[in-house]
Length: 444
Ligand code: PMP
Image 1: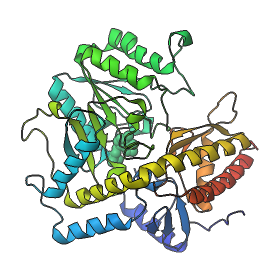
Image 2 (image 1 turned 120 degrees about the horizontal axis):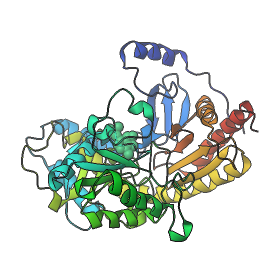
Image 3 (image 1 turned 30 degrees about the vertical axis):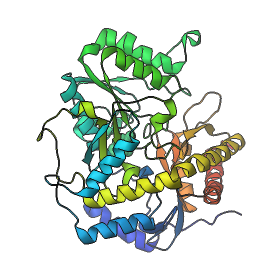
Image 4 (image 1 turned 180 degrees about the horizontal axis):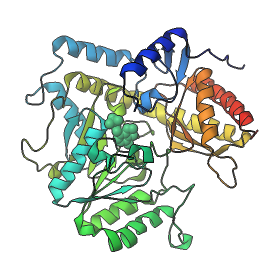
């Protein structure tokens, strides 16, 4: 059955888009005009009554689906008691969330947690703590990384030049190549290790030797799977080797799980796929099903900063904490397992689609964090950003929300509540959109 093309944007959506253009900053990178009215699990409706399947989940945020009843109830119950008290005071849900994060943190040592409002702020807190604890002032980041847009986080973000252009990001961060096995940029000798090893060797043999003395480096900040940079999964060698490098020079390993974390990859934290213990973990997005919450969770022994060294107004916001506790419960009670199983189903189905289509260069990912990279030719791997754009738009016209990442990749990041039947429905639309895009690009 082929899907019907919707006439988008509809009249109500168009009216809101006009008002939006008048008063909302033009800096938001909107991909297409979806104007939300309501949602349920992995389905959403726009203001004109059109139904869409949601393979975007609010940029990998709505882990428990839209308005999961248990999350709604937790927020409602908390809202009736109190909405805010400020981080100068105490409340139990905040402590409960700290206890839960200590329990699930991907390292053996006890954890302490700093609560923030977003991923960027969790990253800022991690940068500050690493500097404070180590007394060192430099950092290693990675090309293709995204860690946020506040000035500290932006110094690390390097997934698209537009994110940095005109802002003169702060100094102190040296970027290394992130190991993308599909597109290795460094020459390496495969008899001496794989591309993951090669990227760690580059940090030690080039960056530490010529540019940045390791004893000045406070921390390495890295995403376990690069998100905005294109859903890049590193080789298995990478994280164990990076951990060893950090240990050798007394450098902290900060893992940014903002996009990959909270069950999306089929484990609570993506770094757990590589049995590597970080020193600090940044979380946000999926942690509270869409309520604004970030958390910087560190080994307790690192939290040497005194009262007043770092804080905020909304940290530990009661509604966000209530939503996070309900979210993590749902993740542990089945959604992480669903992400693993339904994720594998999705990867397998996408591999089948890739075999039928000339423009899919690679399908990659873990759990429900999946990237589909488009090329003009599977042998030359020439990037096909124009095909990617058309796929996204044609999918939207047919009732499927997907987002891009990197230069020529589409990400598939549905709510973790999604069923295999909904995946199949969405992928059928995806393939129709792809067929149309390939015809237009004369690739079919
Ligand atoms: N880190 C990663 C890995 C992200 O993907 C993002 C957001 N895309 C951020 C940090 C920043 O999060 P926020 O937009 O909540 O500030």
